[in-house]
Length: 300
Image (cartoon, rainbow, N blue to C red; front, side, top):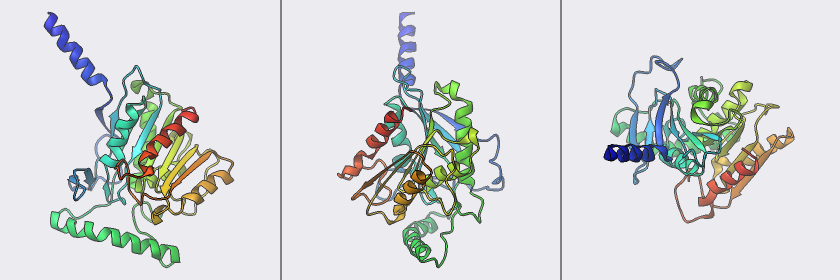
């Protein structure tokens, strides 16, 4: 009897701590609008590393990281990893962020949102990977000159399924706030690069029920000519000065302040694009501490 009691206690301790505990499917059955996507999701490592990546996402989910109840703050953050709308930097910009936050009392949800399809054949995907960066740089330069537009799911002329998943994620977490021991008015969203695009789409296309209570864009987030809503949440913006993809971050800050809304902007001198939770011996490594301080001073 005593031995069984000890085993129960050990199991309770194991599952009561801050690690991934649950996978939530955002839709019953196949996700609306993409019912005919019949390809398989692929997990792979970022070349040269052991960092987990995902591509060809068809089934949107939330991976839940709950803090120990003794330190829970009642705050929740939905995390949107980046990856150019063709893959997700699921560990560096997702689960690693969630683990850090959950250890500080914040309930974290990593959003796996739908993506543009990439080649299913590994060799074809390798060629796609090698050419992707060059194509993005070329398209960004062309966009700056007004010659063309960057084509991806987040463009207005295509349906943005990843954005739909962002809105659905807010609705789900708010609806189930009691189940996760969080406050329904302390639900935020943070996005990285293309994930910042998901975050911004959620803000720009939400009704009051699906609007985040606070938000953060990390090296990304674009208005694309749209106006900031009057009820937009406080916004935390962070990037590196040597990242041309995030060069519009000051404009985003100015747009928020022009509306009289709360915003905070951090620009580190070095860091490039896509640093996430990776460590490179630079001050930008501590970016998440600045985000956490902002959450606390904003009383979320």
